[in-house]
Image (tube, rainbow, N blue to C red; front, side):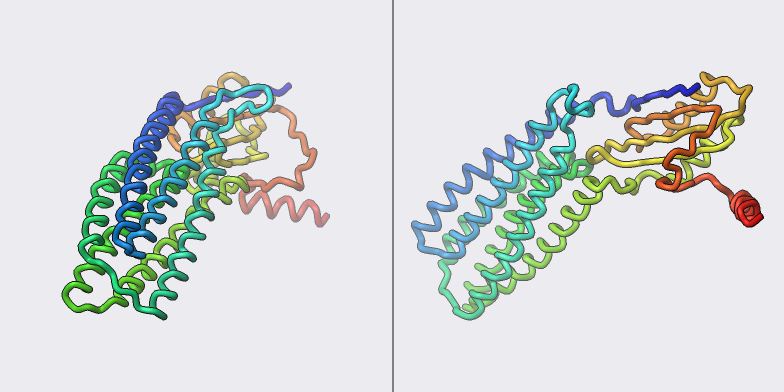
Length: 324
């Protein structure tokens, strides 16, 4: 006879509310960057400054990144149904992956543009550069402040956040370049600083892409110590063996754990489930669990799963038995 228990940590009951807060932050950021893109593009064409025009398109890339994150957030907020029992919260990871690729392309673009500028020096109007950059800094600081809390624990928000950081650093680069040009007349400073930031952007994009793939490929989350969790389950008095252990993430911060517990014949299922639930309740990194308690070990497809529970003594005994 098998019994299963599904539990969800209380700390995640407000996840939907958190997603609504993320959507609000994305909308504010989208409007801010979108409006400033139009202003900066006007300043660029008015002055004829290629630097300001290119930064305006960097701002536009941030608008695109925020829109991708917002669409992914909207899809992820849909309620669970028969065809998607966990809902569509993994849409956030797809959005993060798209943003990571977008950032990677922007990094290559910035590097290429910087290299091209080094080949041909262009005179830049510093007054318009200052005006454009300071306006951008105000917009981007507000946007980063709105998104700061959400991006810490949400990969989708982090992707959008890095787009804003890109435009923020771009504004700082314009100010530094304008000061150097005004004081020394050395125009190569603009593409050199731009290329350095392109390298930073490249590293950040690779990190987001890697994290997205790890979740989509259902690798074990870094914030779950499988050995420790299995050890605690094995310490339950009636448990003989823990097997079919799996851990993966639905999306950022929503880790799922599954295991089968083989218990003694005279053990009480409900007591074992209650003690197992306590193990997961004390672990804030586990969002949802499925535990199956059984008194007979089913070995179907056993070779496909890793046994986390055999001690070195048990392994030696098993090897000796097989040799005989």
